[in-house]
Image 1 (spheres, one colour):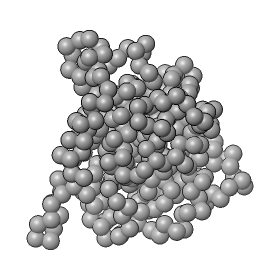
Image 2 (cartoon, rainbow, N blue to C red):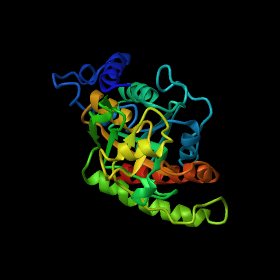
Image 3 (cartoon, one colour):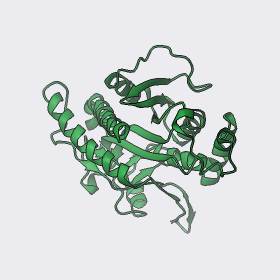
Image 4 (tube, one colour):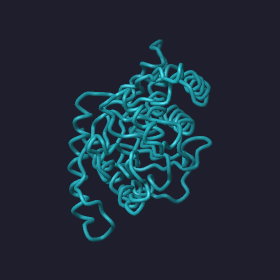
Length: 294
């Protein structure tokens, strides 16, 4: 999926719900308008690619995963709950990749009108950047590392960067994620398979790709686009791009736990997958509580 194709998908999906301009009743451009809280169906939208990533979030937040009235037209895996005084919508596309992420992001955000969107779950990390399994990625920036053109055997980078929101809330999220990770590691010690090291927060850029990349040479060439890249997933760029296309006023955050190292063998990390999903959920819930109380 190219940048133009992604933009076209977002444009087509905007028609699934009344625009912010129509609902607010103002001449303010759609991308800048923000509904008052009384008109929003959810204050915070939490998105995951897979149901196994959403389930522990719902469990920790006491959400009911049984059948609920359809919160978002055409999307069945979406649940509603409360954290503090904030109304939370938890939705999953139950499918990995940019197309699914873009579609789910726009459908949910256009219908629910949240002020904050948080993408959570699991992702890969780069061992050469001193990232370890069990660390938690809270990237300052996400980018698509496969956009580009091949000329004379060399890749000419045309990747478009998508900056995530940076202000006081970012520091709040990063701070509570570090606390949640450490507390959860202590609580789970001896109960599930755990990595040998305590989790740390990783805030370097996150690369995003359409495919799960297993070739170390490809990863090395891609990381040269941004030598500080620390993590990789298949949804972050599409989520940030889509939400910001829909509304530049909406804050977007990514909180994902490292489940494997992209430049090492994945088989060795499979034993930790359940713990990593739970860790990501715990960090997300701590972040939600801090955001809800702020």
